[in-house]
Image (cartoon, rainbow over the protein chains, first blue to last red):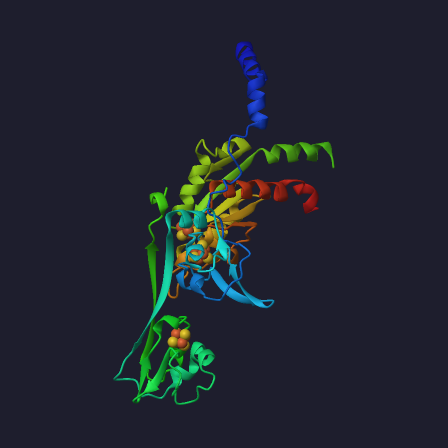
Length: 205
Length: 151
Ligand code: SF4
Ligand code: SF4
Ligand code: SF4
């Protein structure tokens, strides 16, 4: 009894034990800078391309809202899974997270979003709704009226010979307004995401 | 503040019993909680002891998107924990349902609908450090001067 009491006291009086018991901190409670956190703004102006929203795999994690006289992406914690895809997809470098941007630059990688317009000739009635609804068309040809005829060759599409003809697919921004305005669902917009890599000087890291 | 209260505060801050319950997750967050127990993060050096008995727990860690099987289980489990107590939601799932909250899916998030949640740790999954920090900050908010606050 006395002996065991003695051993107990001796054990607990060890200065090392006392220090460890009261002040032990082995875990680094700081997060290393290269860890991917929730995306943060870099300060560059958002151009409202909405690629972040198109690429985001999580439900309700990101939206782009009007703020002041510009647009601004908002991340919703509790929904965002910190994958960093929005950072990669943004063509204007508005967001950053961990070292995603640095890695992209070092390895010459990017996510490219493009849009393909397909028109079902059997369904298209040539009403021109899509042509007039398209905001890009409206900007290029302010004269564009109902019926969808245009003398401007720069528009994305126009009505010709009773059907819609696509002239400049590359100008499409993927808003899908044409799709919702088409009465016969003849026009369809496919959003295409591809990862690309350019060769870098020295072959990358 | 009485000396007795000061002693209670001191002891409580170094003796937190954690019980955790997975109400339907993908196990990603469970693995991160598990990492808290491993030597690298070593949750026990802060006096936090993880086990699975709600009767002894101070903190309940809730993981997962709340499947319907927990309807008549989670609230009674919460009732079983003696005061003072706090529940912490770990991961996106108990906050929003994360990727499982789709139309027609069999989950019913957020968990705060079912039991009071004191802190939420977003992330899919959150890091062990974030989980640790949440427990440590809840500890100071909920358990310090509890008798005084109750009065
Ligand atoms: S990091 Fe991933 S989940 Fe989070 S907002 Fe960006 S794309 Fe969505
Ligand atoms: S998706 Fe938008 S930008 Fe593209 S053609 Fe349709 S309306 Fe025009
Ligand atoms: S938050 Fe993500 S990692 Fe955690 S359980 Fe849900 S899906 Fe899995």
